[in-house]
Length: 224
Ligand SMILES: [Zn+2]
Image (cartoon, rainbow, N blue to C red; front, side, top):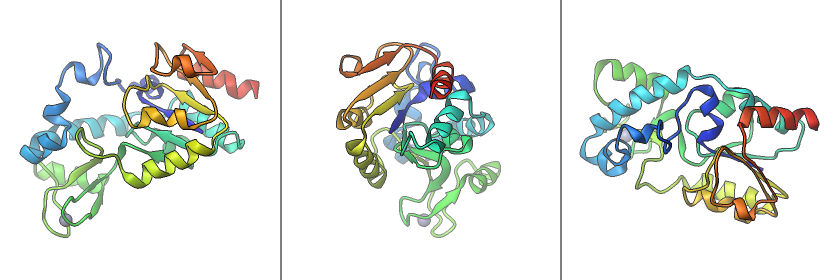
């Protein structure tokens, strides 16, 4: 099983969150990306997410995404859990992808649970500051898990199920600081980590490689 975080997408030109050049260096997540902010001022939250969605749709999968898809094709990987919302794993060809923080694929209505695809959302955002539910007229919420929201229950259940059965959890590009996802590797029999910089589970890992995701995973695919 594979678990990926922001570090797997930085080589696609997507900034991470917590580093000095990360997204949260410029904006306060609780002002633009929390459920409280959405309830208070959904238009401001959509102002932030519109730019973000457009940027993420422009990004392309990098060698790390392709290497992980290849490992699944060769049956080394059974499932891939990601904290990323950018859909790059799916676009690179990974099939069993569990997006535990949601994704930019759609927006959802909190009142009637209608889901609207991103294309339709972006069309609406050309005309109004926040997209509306086609069924009940309520303002839609980005299909991304906001701060203060519970993670999607079904996704976390599947992720935990795969983690418990995993002989090895390969963590790529996550410092394993965001719970409950950071607890998933502890469910697996063993953990290997590829990440630039320390992670919360370095001392529990069978192997830790402090390196770039793309280069390291390409080497892994070649070696297998
Ligand atoms: Zn609705």
